Amino acid sequence: MTSSSDPRLASLEIFIQEHPTIQYATATSPNYSTLRATYTLDNPAIPFAIVRPQNAEDVAAAVKFAKANGIKPVVRSGGNSLFWKSMVQDSFVIDMRDIAYVNINKLKTSATVGGGILFGDLGEHLTNEGLATALGTIPFIGYVGWSTYGGYGPFSAQYGLGCDNIIGAKVVNWRGEVIEADSDLLRCIRGAGGAFGPVVELTVKLYPLKNILAGLIIYDSTDIATTIQNFNSGYQKLSIEGLPPALCALQMVLNSPYGKIFACTFIWGSDDHETGQTYLAKIAALGQVVNNTVAPNTIAGYLQQLKAMVPPNAYGSIETISIRKLNAEALAVIARNIEKMPQVDGANFFMHELRGPSATPNPESIFGPREPHMVLELIKTVAEQRDLKRAEDWVGTFIDELRKMDPRNILPSTYISITKPGSNSFKNIFGPSNYEVLLEMKRKYDPEGTFDLAQPEVNSLK
Image 1 (cartoon, rainbow, N blue to C red):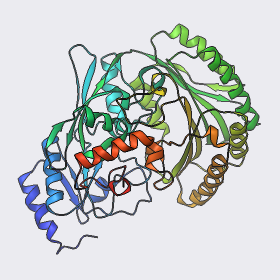
Image 2: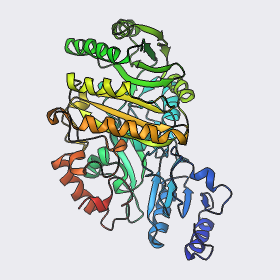
Image 3: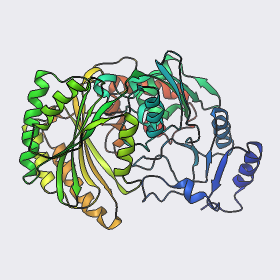
Image 4: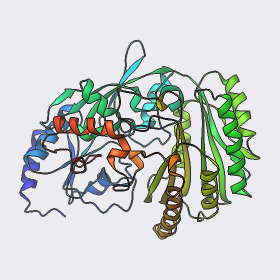
């Protein structure tokens, strides 16, 4: 806790007097717990102060204040880091969520978005204009944090990853200046996010899209291991035939009141619903369907549906590994551990597929795994703290078995946003050549380590 005799408090009081529109809180403020709340309920960090700037100039002033008072700044966009990156002990938290504008250009080919915009709000703005961009599926996640660190999502196969849709950025640098990112800095922002300073604005590509097909297909899971095996055998045959870019079929295993269920989130990101219905039938035919909620919708409408399904907070975190193929060995490990999955709310398993344009080399980004692959998410974010150990034990065994598989099928890289600190090296995550670029740009754009609490951490880049 910050002492009332802390000289930084006097400096903060002067700072707020000079910037009266900035909302703030310290540990003794009545609104502190509200501003401090994040997705993770088990983060014990008590930041020195939390500020909510209203524009880029406020962010620049906040960075200058932090430097002048020897306090490390931390940037929060959505506050959903499962490894507590947006709320750090004794830090100066710059909460971007009031900077949440969306400005669409006249040609409707791009938009500038504020550094605190959330998926749900961005989706609503774009839907109202009959437009889309690369997005994820959880409405309360911050778009800038998601996109700049990679950004897997249901539109990756047709639009690319979130980072591949960034065409411009404004950043507050280590001196506390608002700058336009040049090509070198922009390349690094596309994959390494806010490691070079708070991203106060992005310019992103837009695409025409009015309506989608979206929903959940739940398969008979009486013999869940066989269901998973059969689904993937059929899905691989469809993949060999060729899958359209508009198709996303996200596999998952969830705990429900009726037991474990294997399901597929189906999203068809095109106004051509006739073709979409054809592929919906093909995906549905990969198992015995017990419920199918897929229906015409908008991006905004679907995000609102998901908001009601996803808890706003939880205890715990996640493990991840990326593999090239769902081969027989991988499927056997997955099926075996799914059968062991404890019946607790929040112990889940997801698989994201990367194919299409983002799965090919991109010299304008330092995002690492540019080849087709599957991201496996072993989730231990439970609703009740008493269930956390059971979920952690299950995930620990599961990830150990996955890491012991044939190394030729395992990517060195893992998705940085869901990679537990210390479980993989940044050289692996970004790849050797991109890692060297990252080191060089970090020395150039953050020479004093002002933003060394951002991911990747400057102290790890040595």
